[in-house]
Length: 492
Image (cartoon, rainbow, N blue to C red; front, top):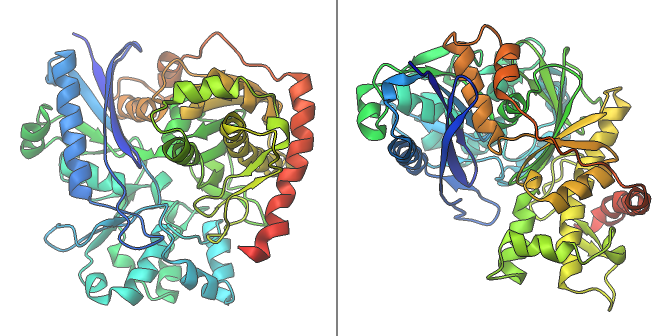
């Protein structure tokens, strides 16, 4: 009898569900989108009930489309957008919309905190710098600005944790996502309860924390009716989307780097000890099987390309943009884009940072803007790579992931700017695949993550190599790019 695994990835703009058999054959993928709500400038919220409804309907569509018997699904794993804050009362009802990672409302609180001793303690314990949109930052804002809602909190979850709760009824989280809350002792892999007390947060609201491959529970009858899944199907804890994307690319131990361009963009790698940048320009989070991941996380990835398309290329799809950039030489004839449309996290941690087009002349046209945006997003990944190299991390093999891996032209830009060979997975939904791999290990189908990755993670034969001529152009461009933020910081 065939054995199937399901991976669910709760993204920022859509939920994706993948079904794969234990030999590595993908039976199908389905997705449904949803919106980000912004009731005030700088706010970013989502209705978790709507996200659950989108998840349930996507699962049902996938099961209907594949026609498989749900009883043959041996495990379900989850991946999800990190850092967001989802609040439940004692009746396990949502208190308010989730505050998600791109939210900027806590900027003034963090600015005040940065001048206090507690700020340094956050860095030393969490191995990260507090930033807007993080779970703890949103909690501190809520405690001050919405005290009635704060008093109602029974448990404070992360977005994917709520979806898991709706699947199997279990309240909990796991190490990869918990370490992204910035109220977690990343070295010891447990909640930083003493730190929470120092800032006036009741740590009893933190959910119990598990490991990614542990079984959280089984699909409930109510969930089975809503999704078409079989009641009793095991559900694993899973992980944050970046660690799960790494797993889906086979990055479970040191030696490889993942360049992901989704809504935001991230350069990440795995290390076997809690290594961190002492200037706190990157993030260090927990990874699977006792490892850690170092991540240079930009708030601006595909969201910048979406902005360009929606405002200047209406009616054009991404395929058109790819054709446009092929008409423009590497370096966009001197046009450089600083992609800070939503502020920035790595390497500057500055919610006030703003985007810039630099070097604009009469010779530039709309095609140059398209290429410059792709180059600017990739330059932000290059900044993270420079930090990795400072930390002594090898960056010889780069696996491209997310939307940035779907464009051959953008893959060439990444190879030329990063100066590395670029590999891509045959599966384009790497976070879903990572969640399915976790499910397979948790269900006992595979004896280890290595066995699961060896079986399920396959790379395309084509490798994209850097072109020397383009690399030389980009080295000069990158030198100028790195000066744009410090030269304009006082104006933001």
